[in-house]
Length: 245
Image (cartoon, rainbow, N blue to C red; front, top):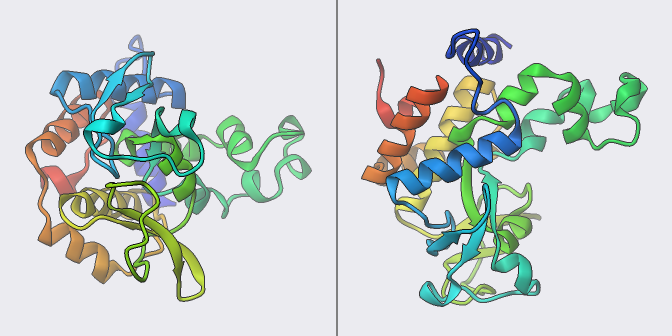
C-alpha cells in the first residue's frame, strides 16, 4: 500500500493546481501515448513490431503486410491499434473489493465490471490502470488473445499470426503467451519490474526470468526517450530504464 500511495502522490504533485493531468483517464492516457509515439517516431506495435498509421485520437491502422502479420480469426481487430497493459488490470485489481464485490459494497457500481467499478471508486487503481509506463500499442487481435494470460514458454513454434513471433498455448496446465526473443522481452520486463515495484503487482512470471530478460536485452533509444518524456510530463518515472535519480 505504501508503494501505491507514493505513486498516487507522484501523480498528484506532478502538476500545478491549474494544470490538467494528461493521464487522468484511460482515454487521456491512450491519446497522450499516441502523441508521444508520433513525437519519437516509434509507430510500431509491441508484440509483432508492425508499423502502423495513426488515424484517430489514440488508434490507428496496422500495416500488416510490412511485418507479415496474419489474421487468426478477426480481420478488423487484427488491423486495429489497441493499447495493451503489459501487466493486466486484473492482476492488481482482483485483490480489491471494488473488483471482487462491486455493487455489493458500492451501489454506484451496479451493472459495472470489476475494472469499471474500480475506475469509478478507487483512486489508487485508477493511477495504476492509467500509468503510461505499462501501456504499449498492439494489434487488437493479438492484444485480445493475450488477454490477461501470463507470459511463458509455449512448446513448439505453432504460429497463428503469420511471421509475428508470438504464440498462445498451454504450459504447465495454464494458458500462456510467449513473446518473441530479443529486445521485446527486455521492454516487457522493465514494465513488469516497474509495476511490481511501484504498485506491488504480481507479474506472474518468476522474477529470475524477468531479471534475465531485463539484463540480456537493454533498452533501445526509443524506449529510453519514451520513458524520459513520460517521466517529464506525468511524473511517472521508470528507473529500470532511466536509472536512479
